Length: 131
Image (tube, rainbow, N blue to C red; front, side, top):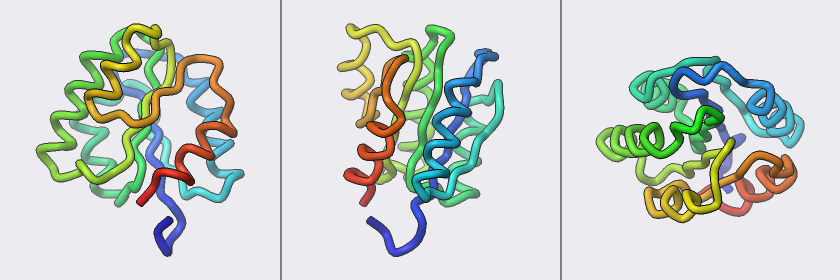
């Protein structure tokens, strides 16, 4: 763990307008002592990466309920690699079919949390995996 509070960006890419789950995760992360930035709804991949850079995020977590997780995650991944954020912990959560979870991990999203995941598991995963 770094010597500063871990900064987590929770972002909502695309046109998905459902953010209750993201807000639940945000509150759980705050309660666990993380420094959390929430992007708000309908962010472009470019805006998400820009926020991650400006906020010096240690963790970039995407919340996707729209079903567009694969193209959105690919685009965010490409931008993060281009901007040198390959060393950050990337997470994704939401409506993610089991068949897509390995694809997301292969893209570099080390934590994949489908709908129904427990917030305690997300907190533990971050604590165990932030460099």
